[in-house]
Image (tube, rainbow, N blue to C red; front, side):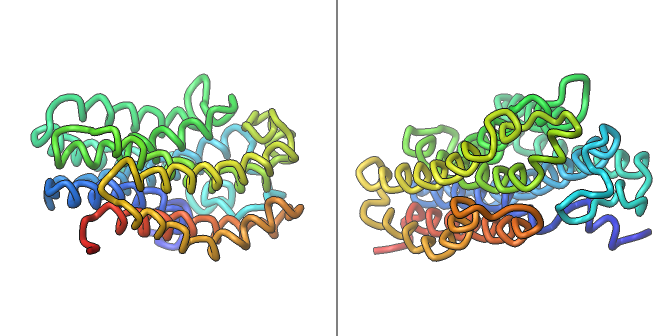
Length: 294
């Protein structure tokens, strides 16, 4: 087995997108005296498998649709590089989604059938992002997919499987996570704007153009902090919501690159920086909601 190729296809640096929302949802549950280790770990395992499955689907389906050509600016892809055959990647994708489904079965037993609808929807969207007859990522819906499933659904779902309810403050807490994870995708789509346009992959960046995409990135970060700070009066976090401002230094580099005209392969570093910012922001938000601070 070519482990290096599978690692390339699974894209470990992107897994922060799965970790951050579970941290926030679990910390919010802890703050409400509802933390449950079993469901929390199952939610994390399921989210990681869902992210890996979506990455594998993206790897193979983008290759088959011609979006990953030899001149791509991003890191090499396993299928496009010939390191893994499409059939192999599809089998790996099926295994990842099957493991996510298994975690979902446990969570359904713990929290009820509504979890099945959310989990099944996440798997279906992971495949439909770049696969199927009408791929979401090719019709300017990638940003909405990331926000909905790796932001709102992941945070609220993680809280729900532990507490059995979903109060308003948890929905509010999910918005900053959705904004920051979507910001990662925005960097990716700006970098690939020209090649996606040539491959007829109509991302939101292709539809709205370069300038609007750069502004969209800044707006997402502004909205993330705005909603996080709104948790001060809206939850038990109180002034600890200000902790999220400590992530500002990690956002400085991505903001300079995105608003200052960074492009091409230089945005690969910005992509990594934005992923680190997303995880740090989520960890700080989780700490503010956890009830562990005086």
